[in-house]
Image 1: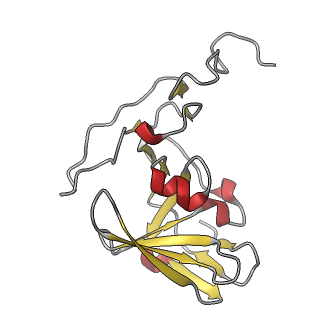
Image 2 (image 1 turned 135 degrees about the vertical axis):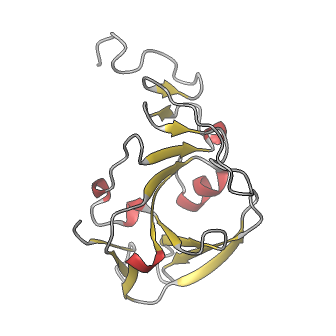
Length: 175
């Protein structure tokens, strides 16, 4: 796998990841919505040792997870405020990269067997979930680390009814 590189908005903070992601999480929880300022976080998870900061020194904001009660460390640029990655008290060997900070965000593949959609109960009502991907209303595992059974949709699935109407591929022509 080629080296993945990324950085903050102003360019003061840069990083590289030298291994493929272990998995990819699409998280729709309120924390990720606030942390990204968007509808969800696309978070490739890597071995912590695979990520290195190549320019600048990130600041760290510690946040206690409402779900697990454990600390999350958000690593961000002190100049422009961009959050680049997070590390976890609960999973000390992992780091989660904010995929939008990669130089090529499309390098992260979201595919069945390698990705999951979590906290979809908090998703915006017009959110469309991907088919074939393990999906969870909340977290994918309980506080003890026991996995919950996933739900998997066979076709695109809209979370709510806002903007209801046909989804692409359901026989209606796209406009």
